[in-house]
Image 1 (tube, helix red, strand yellow):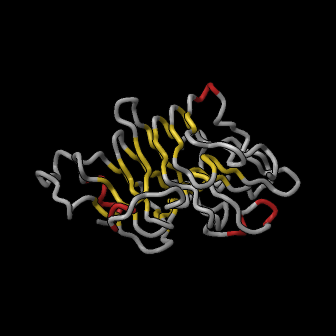
Image 2: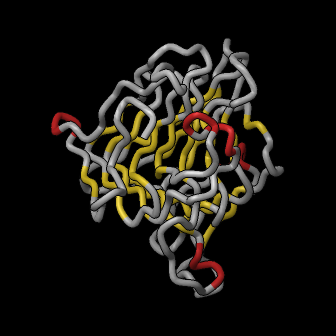
Length: 245
């Protein structure tokens, strides 16, 4: 199914009865690395069916009309193992993209591994995470509320030049923020009432420039955001401080 047709499919108008073992997901098809320049909405599917993203998804419209990727409460999105979802585009300031994942306490949204389609057990680091490229997203539009992130945070970023000081590979996060291309510190999107678990790297990873500029200012571990970080101990920090680790 092409991404732009996704918003026509709901649990009401698309059902398969009892979901057989061979039918577990609806796949979103797009070219590898293609820029999704139009709004895309994923609706909740019937129990037993999830959405699956294939290839790397880049949400990026023009500044006058940013593309918005919206997930309704209850949506489960299995992310291609080894892939990522990119909000905004690293290629420059002439593109814009946002993501709105607004779940509820009783119907949270979930980003998870797609290992099940190969009959494998999901594991931390199955997918690279959701990446933001400031200033190509709008902090007052993009948001996560009652969202579960699991099995993300691969150790292999899609572009190693976005590591701190460009010094080789490091752990990604289930949410990853690159350094600002303008060099200015910036606010991140709203992230509230959300759970980060089973990550290989950090729950949230933020890169800065070598001189401590262009950094994410929002600290999502603060109690005011009511986020939960499960299983993060020792050197695997829940969120990087505002400097290079």
